[in-house]
Image 1 (cartoon, rainbow, N blue to C red):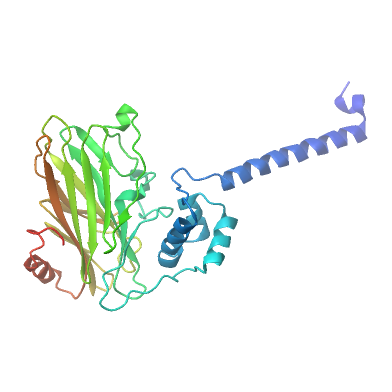
Image 2 (image 1 turned 180 degrees about the vertical axis):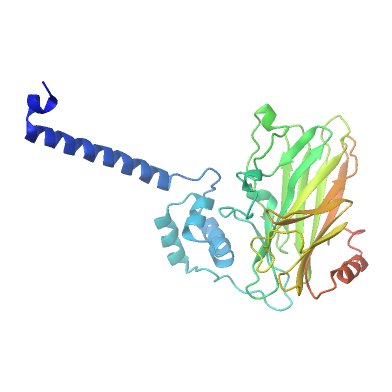
Length: 335
């Protein structure tokens, strides 16, 4: 005897209706849970002041959408929209840079991947190594400097600012704590990390009117000399208007300098690090690299690197390299 014969047509119809409703509720429930689940790499603001600062950063300057803010913070969209209204923050409402002021440099907030392509080579990028340097041109956007993106040593891949290939620490199932940039009263950004084996490294960023000076240091807290200390420092071009073409044909590499020309050839983004290891670019990202190398470091010692980032208006970028050299940035730490 069939189910229809046993329970009757009306009862069967009711049962099927209830079953369908249950399935829909289940599906809708899963969809809602998925919609409002915090993204893997999200960081919730610690209080209302922190929320305002990050919204000014994300929306006022980076022009994030509500979904991108959600990806960065894990906050529900309705809560984000309410906070934006409460604080009076809209896309692009951040104060414009005035003549004579230092270049605008902000911690990169995450939530929007700084690459166009080669995304599988930078899964879950961490924001504590990344800064946004806004161009001096109206509506010119920004570049994202990842400093450092990676550090190698005789121990292996000692640090990586995203997930891609195994590091010394992932092979030991050791998780590194999340950090944030610290801003000084003079606008300087600093971030320092201590690794489980006692290696300590940090970055300091000093915005100036015409350039951004950078320095990195590494302290050897182990009992063995560290060698082959190669650093990968990346400048990603996705957010800079006119610089995001996925090609290396628009780039000039003359170590320690690496530069990218705009689509019209009138402007350039320039970066450099010293002591230099190699200058190159990845056309898929697209990005610039002026990768440095720390000197070998004995136990208890600290070694240093110096860096530069600037924007150039003109067509003779190699002449600009010579002008930058004349500033003496290679010999002196930023002050």
